[in-house]
Image 1 (cartoon, rainbow, N blue to C red):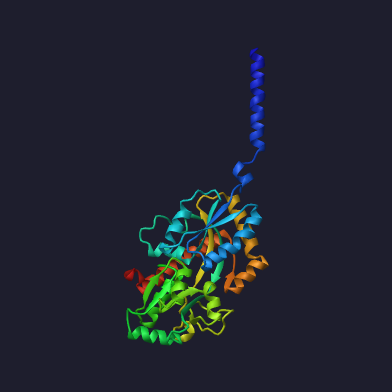
Image 2 (cartoon, rainbow, N blue to C red):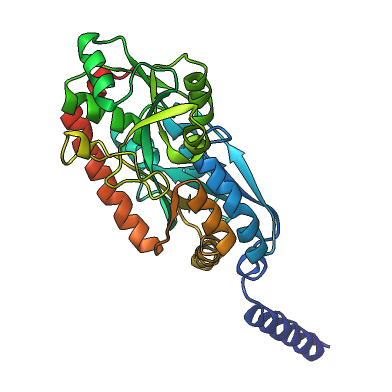
Length: 329
């Protein structure tokens, strides 16, 4: 009897061991099994939101699941960043962030996480053209008009942006520093509310990415005074850059990148990266991004990590030059 028991025990161990060796890890084999959430750190209607929604369907199709855009505006993108960083690294929560994500490392002195080390990088996604805008009925016909009036009336002319620490905020404070003006920064929870106030005349000016404002510029509801990025827009080639208008070397642009929580399994990272690259290169996605002035791009995860490190250094230098942290509102 004892011999029979030992035989059955040995057979059981052999069967269990064989099953374990032949079965790959469940997470790696079955991911994804439920919808993936894309956190967007701005209100609906802005360029980051538009990009996320364009990417969601083709990425979901490539991965065999659905993707849900989760807008978490406000706080310069910090609440959204914290939500991403503190999410489980299971591949079901990712985020499409902008330059304000890297700026948090500079403008938030008590940041609870490292913007480079505490995430899993996926890919750089978009380069965004940024413009200085005024309402169509504004007395400012040129950037010089705006600057001259701002010099004559310090601390009275406002400029709206998508939030404190955003690329647009840095663009405005860099202009203040280079032009010797003292325009007042008015942060919003995204491009859409800033655009609404600009169109309604509650703002004297605004600095916003080209995506949500393009149609309003083309129809004459808004006047674009200058491009803050290094080169002119392919879609609006007649609008000069700030550098061209007497401020050589001036540039302050925006980018979007796809990131995930730290500790994401390598195979899931690879699947997300491959799905993203496939989506961003799809003719229909690229065409729609082109039509709103957004330049589609991609990178390896390591390239994105290196890029984030260099961006934090660049932003810190700009913050020191403009003293913008000394006047935080």
